[in-house]
Length: 173
Image 1 (tube, rainbow, N blue to C red):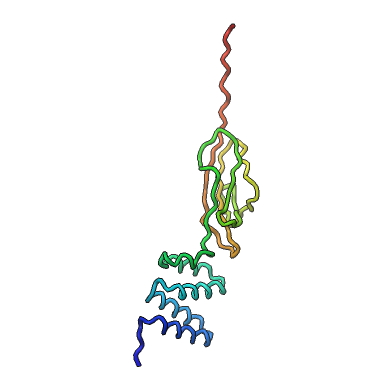
Image 2 (cartoon, helix red, strand yellow; image 1 turned 90 degrees about the vertical axis):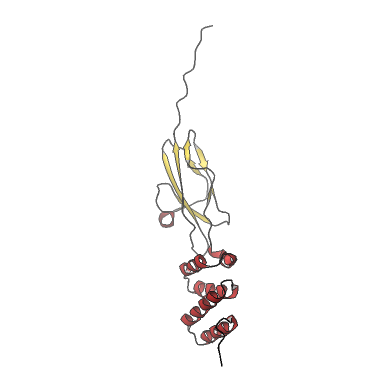
């Protein structure tokens, strides 16, 4: 009897045995071996993601994504959180304004105005932020999905400097 080391079906059968034996570590190793043989094997990715999700090992899912073939991106969709979008670019403004933040996927948005990390001390975004004082603002924001996974934290800096109006020119009649 000879084992065809490149036959992923055999490895799936081995993984099934490890499932029956409740040997999760060997099951994980087997799915990783399948991915090593066939980097585009969606069933193996989904099996690993299921295991990691049940254990709430989201960093393991993100690590798996980082090494995955990009054609497997749809397997990871619910774990990928896009950052929020800002209504204004960083810059110097000579007017006050309301800053709107939006999430493409409708996720909760957290933000700070003091440059601190919104994943630690963020305020829940619900209404536009008033940028209404002459000063510098450092706005940091991220999105968080229902699993508690955060997007990249984006930073925008705004400087508000209102110029004094020009003196009127008076001419004699």
